[in-house]
Image (cartoon, rainbow, N blue to C red; front, side):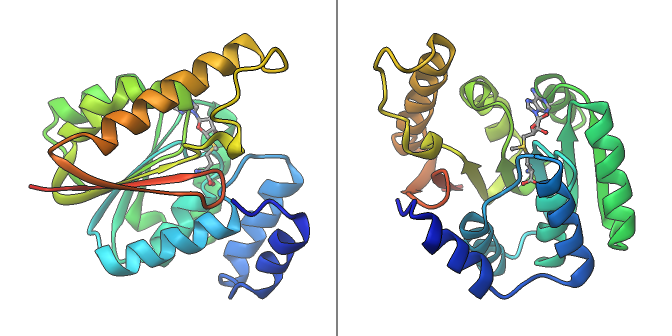
Length: 215
Ligand code: SAM
């Protein structure tokens, strides 16, 4: 994983930028310390969307809507995106409106665990699922996420190498983080050994795991 800040800054500068309104949404999120997708992960996400051509996307972890907007701008899909913090939901709705994408987006407020169960009951299915919320919950949400994935669909799990700290277990690491890392390692193992999925792991950004439904 390349962590040299100069290289990351170079990537930021050299990458083809999004449209001006999308870049403004990004800038605002960064100014307000909202944790948004890293530029190199964003590049991979765009590439995968171009290959996969989804018609329906589910995002778990919307924050203020930046990655949802990027996914909408780089596909013809509709998106359902989940966020638990009301002030972030409000900002996301504003940002999606500002980028003229409201007719293709639905922002759902609440805990992802509850909303995912509800989507399953409503028989919803998605071609592409972007996991970018509470890392320790990925493993708990996995059965529901799989139930929501269409045949040939893809799961894009961000942050799965925890910025390179995944193997840390020293005293310097807080107990809570140790638990998160342990659960994430289990999640990675499960996906890489799940016979219904084909998965690949990349040390890009904070670590990305791509999983394609074999059905
Ligand atoms: N995908 C966003 C982007 O790149 O623009 C960034 C998402 S941020 C890394 C993770 C978000 O997930 C936070 O805004 C957090 O409030 C939300 N989140 C965490 N746990 C959640 C849960 N259980 N249910 C719903 N949202 C959750």
